[in-house]
Amino acid sequence: MLALEILFWCSLGLLVYTHAGYPLVLWLLARMRRTRVLPDAPAELPSVSLVVAAYDEEGVIGQKVRNALVLDYPRDRLELIVASDGSDDRTAELARAAGADLVLDLPRVGKAAAQDAAVESARGEIVAFSDANSLWEPGALQRLVAPFSDGSVGYVCGQVRFTADAGAANQEGAYWRYEMAVRSLESRLGGITAGNGAIYALRRFHYKPGDPYTGDLSLPFRMARRGLRSVYAASALAEEPMVPSLEGEFRRKRRMMSRAFGTVLRGGMLNPRGYSLLFAFELASHRLIRYASPFLHLVALGTNIALLGHGAVYAVLLALQAAFFVAAAFGAFVPLRPLRLAYYYVMVTASIAVGFYDWLRGGAPLVWEKER
Image 1: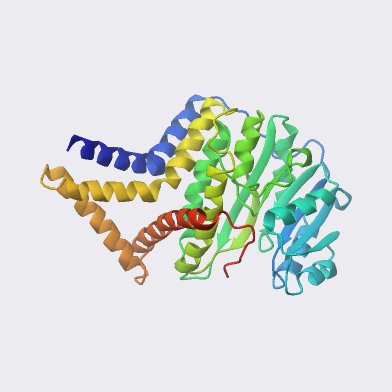
Image 2: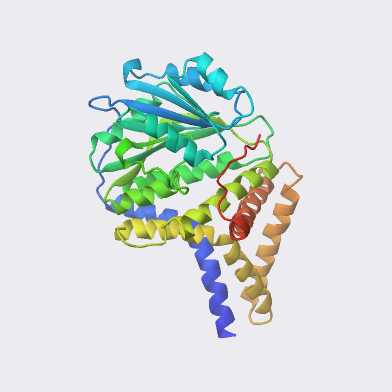
């Protein structure tokens, strides 16, 4: 019985810690520690190659190219490269027509390999990356590259804001605001533990081609091993449409997590060599425990049921768990925000477990699919 109690309280405690306790600890550490203020404008504008890897994006690629070309950045210091990853539509043709400096019409090789090909052809000192459906604010690129004025910075991620039609069921926007708050605190301490594909950058000589796990999850921990910081530039803003349905969001996150587990288990994240103590703490708290959350929920629920009759507290906690899952079930079709948030949490947590199963079954996917 003691073993069951230990399992229950540890699993419940880790769930509460990773979602609520960890942000509070970060806030306290940030209050106690003097942190460097990152520049919001570069002292000298470096040359930048902006890479957009695209697969069947004829509906948005022209707008993306035009958006990139009107950024508040000297045109002679900005190179725009579109890498079409085996697109079956007019993506490459429309990118050329819109004015991209270089369009690579590649066979279907996967996003990482498409980005490798683009970086191999890039001339910029900095390589920045964006999605085809992400539109940047005019000053975003200047603010994204500004932190590189500090030689200790190796990777910079901007802020993406999600847009949605009124009444959209997906609650990704609410989750992302929470995630950005955590990322802002991490940036002031050991460095962020992940970026996002919509807007990020690094020095070209730090980009290592040929790695199927390279991306916005792996780059921060690899920079940490080189003694470099990965930071969040909140003022570098991008906007991206949200997947409207929670079911679509589930499919998208399922694919993301199948790739994430490849990075965690095969891509070197678990190797502790080279991490500072603070960054290792952030990585364990924000990534590893968070990715274990579906399994922690199963342990908490199972041990809670087994402990019924061994104290009123277990009956109360089981009732609370049951009420939460009932609220999530209603959130699938009742448009009340608390219920939608509960449903979103359960769907996203389930996507971690299903993504893990997908990875066990077939490994990380090399090619990508879009969720409209």
